[in-house]
Length: 376
Image (spheres, helix red, strand yellow):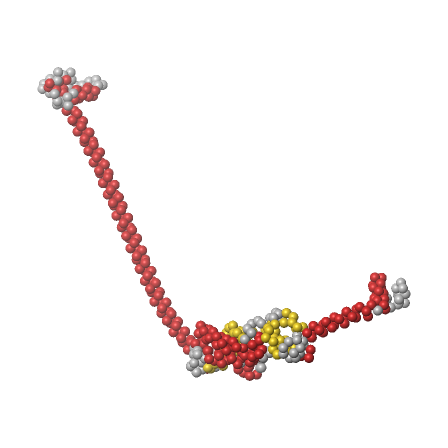
């Protein structure tokens, strides 16, 4: 048996009480005409606004330019409008194709000349590499990337057309002739010299900017990414390059040996100079030490001489002092002092050489003391 709600409605089984209340309210609103009076008009209005926006409003993305074309003059003059529309929403009468907004990229664009010529012939989406004849008569396929941007979308649209026609009608017809003109100035071997390739690529960029200025396109970079010759030419170039590298290697080794010999000679000369300077230093040291020793000995000798002279002078002065009056008495006193403490002295007392210590006059005469003969 099917459960029923409190009101006995068999169409809302197994619902909570608040759900049953909401369902009952919605059922009442539908029965009362609320949807017909409020909900439906709002939905219709929203649908009309949506259709109107789709029909009359166009969005230009942040990385896009917009160029508007008026086909039927209602609100503005017919034709391509000179105004460039930037990012945002813009009024465009799209019904019956009265007006149309054409969009062009604002950011950097890249067109590649790449792939083998066979791939380019089989696949439409592969742009063939630039086929360039070198200045010495050989052919080379060059992979090139051209980086550019749209500077004036009005000129692009009026001179080249809408959508991506600026590539088909602008960049591609101009690029390969310019690349052939600039890169064709290189020889077969000069393609391997990156500074020369870069210089020719910069020249190609300048030529392209000169040719594309009237179309509102500016080239930022021309990048030579890869190049390939035929197998036979490539083999000959590689063999020649290997021989050249061998020659360069031998020349470099010869220069290295020469420089090594120069370096060794410089080291030996430097070491000899160092040894000479060290010997000169040792000789200078010995000379200075000899001079020092000579100076010390000289000063010592002079000092010793002064000391000896002073001692001689002292002796001389003492002798001179002994010759003056009263010196004999001093000698006597000294002699007496010398004889102090002598308990026994045996001397001959008779004859001419007899010694009588009590006879001071004779004693002084014996020692030849001046004036002894006149002493009292």
